[in-house]
Image 1 (cartoon, rainbow, N blue to C red):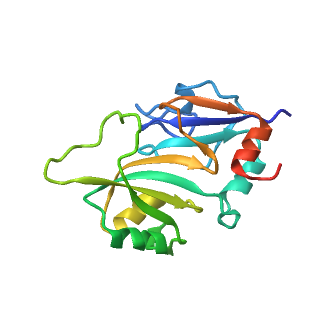
Image 2: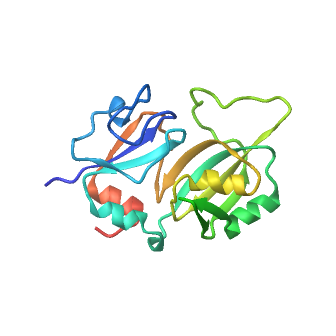
Length: 196
């Protein structure tokens, strides 16, 4: 069996699956992926950015187990002018609710950044003249359901726009929404720093 490896810049509003639901498009609306390829992890419909797909089932176990320390970096636009105190809390770990249970997030890397150079979102984030927005870069090595959104809300700054920038050394640099990159097995494993 030939293993195949892809990265897509998942657009806002697209489901991380192959079956459309209602008026929401799915991944197959943007590219004809092989029938046996599946996403590694997920991105919520209202999140954008890097999503990996492969028919190599080993990758899920190698990437999605927190003790493997595979870093995922997100660019997050939040409501309000985020504070150093809130960023420090995100870095140390915060208590969120996952599936009705309290969960303490692992320490993360968090820092304030200028607005990154990203393609505009369609539709754009709502603009409110009296309330500023700000951006942080957040790097995690775990991925609970809607974790980034829960974390920023826990420190008082709800997420307005969430873009996964990178997993390991694979990033959306140079990509536009719906763009797809294809990797050789060697490239894929090397960029993710996992052993083949």
